[in-house]
Length: 388
Image 1 (cartoon, rainbow, N blue to C red):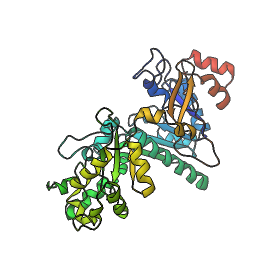
Image 2 (tube, rainbow, N blue to C red; image 1 turned 90 degrees about the vertical axis):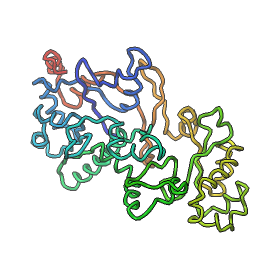
Image 3 (tube, one colour; image 1 turned 90 degrees about the horizontal axis):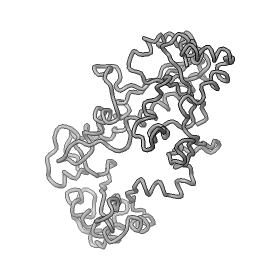
């Protein structure tokens, strides 16, 4: 979004994700390339005295320091918040941690751990099955997005006050925020069963905690994933179908149940709640005669909310996503062309161009000279001292 992002990597080692899940030997992994667009790579030994000198100047020159070290690591290096403020009172120091202050603040956290600790796993899956993690990176990328808007808020605050501040995004907090509708349901459960959940219609008793709800809609309008034509061989030949009350008459006409429009057992949302299995079974009898795209073409003009289950292959090949820059193709000097996700936010006055990820240490000399103002002789001495 226009920032000059300098990625600081340890000399001789680099970011661990450069080598994780490699699909081409000795080439930066897609794991790394897809998460490090539009950055410059600077190698820096922050434990070396000359390296600390460079880091001090970076703090003095830059606007934001983003770190995800273990708790206390920066303090041990001599770059705690108090020292950062001494070097640059306008600096915004942004941190990602697994947990906020409390009994687990020193625990190491990864994506799936965050999903489990933040409430997502306990509410994902079917009520008679195991808790499930989701393929969406709500722990890692979700927390990064929370940190991003925290940084932007801190930048705006600095424009008004002249002061920098600390920004903390804990992964548990970020996941819980994304699970707020389940926290809503936890409180509703104290006053009676959650009637829009499938288990209510199946007469299965609710426990004390918000249960796993399968593919039920979380918005109060009953919805499920239903089979479409070709489901026997295509694992993604499904659609999500919501029985929105406002278009119930249209749904009845489309699926061949016109008598349900006035029938007392089906005509109102409360009457349908105990019969959702029957309702969705009848709808699925119809969707199985159509492809997921045909379901969309028929239902959308009637304002019936449906959506096809799109595979990663279908998304990667969708022309409209390429045209809007949601999916982009980058050319890497060692890997060659690869696909990634572009900026999901579109700005009317700013075109976001996605550039490839940096090679290891590719911009070290450039950053030291152009950003920090070091001479060629000073850069050479830093290299000799093992600082970069």
